[in-house]
Length: 447
Image 1 (spheres, rainbow, N blue to C red):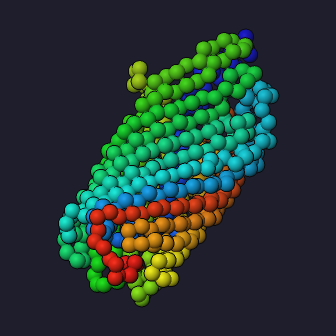
Image 2 (image 1 turned 60 degrees about the vertical axis):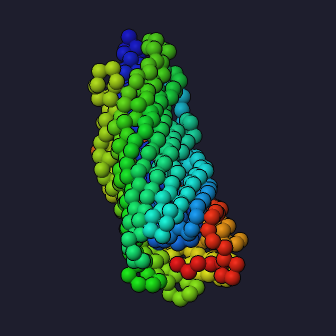
Image 3 (image 1 turned 135 degrees about the vertical axis):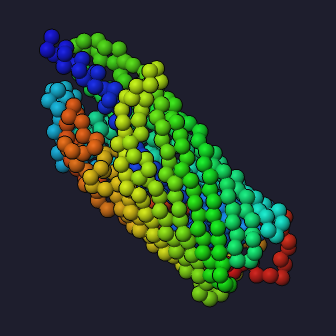
């Protein structure tokens, strides 16, 4: 009877164990890799006009830098993370320790999943002052999968987040110095989070998933006080989502049969808004210096609730409680000749995750970006970009103990350290239709 009561309590607690999977939405939830051109600069100067219209993702006013006719760009990025959580100590709840079906000394293995991130841009110059365009991106995403039987599995197993954002834009060039633009965001978001759940002599998997379509806006301005100098200010609004989906809890088989459950749920989630400032300064006819400062309002996420559709009862409050994120980048590009441009950049990113709240699901930390890239202009209308970045992430301590927002006494404590690095490779093709011919002009355009 005593053993039966123990497993009954564990099965009732399983619902809460799954629902506390808020850690998926950390700093890396946002995907910065939206341009092969600016990848080579560590995204320095991404809010100013230039040969690539991919800058409209951060500042829609840069659409006024598009050439005559119709411009199309396809950017493709491969993200290759290497991240492992090495556990220092796992002290299980006695009931879980008694299972004897998992090894508490197993590290996470490489939790990062390689990812392919495409983005597409189009712009049309209606006349000398009016421009329209479209950007299609994946601004948020996540993919982590540790070893299935690792020591921290009751706090996290696999996680995935997928998004598509469609952003129509209209821009207006007020004069040679000032341009403005605004756009609409239509965003689809899908999230699936898994964690280990004790089910008796085996370990089951609890799943929380949901999706939704939300709406937001973008806006921006560029200012060119004099030739060779440009400043850009861009804004991407928050997008409010009401994720609709299910919470799935496995059945307990032994010693007291308890059926599994699928509970329809909803959760209100607001993605963070972002403000960025960029500059570009032409040093001479061949060399330019660029920079960016970016602020992301991660602190607005606070503590959203997972609610049961049947009765509106709150199943769990998800404690995000992040700080705001900051990103600083500086880069330069050099026109080697009329066809080839070389670029490089360095950046420092301050994560919204600190030691007090870092979790096992996405152990985010501050990082340094080092990048290089090039552009090859095949002719006036066709260009290719390549970009490469290596990210050096600081080691992040994890201490899910009493007092930590994720700590659950029914699971036990977990301490360890996350070690991470990332390689990013990007390539793009840019093409323009309908512009004038330039048989006697150089291929490159001086921005």
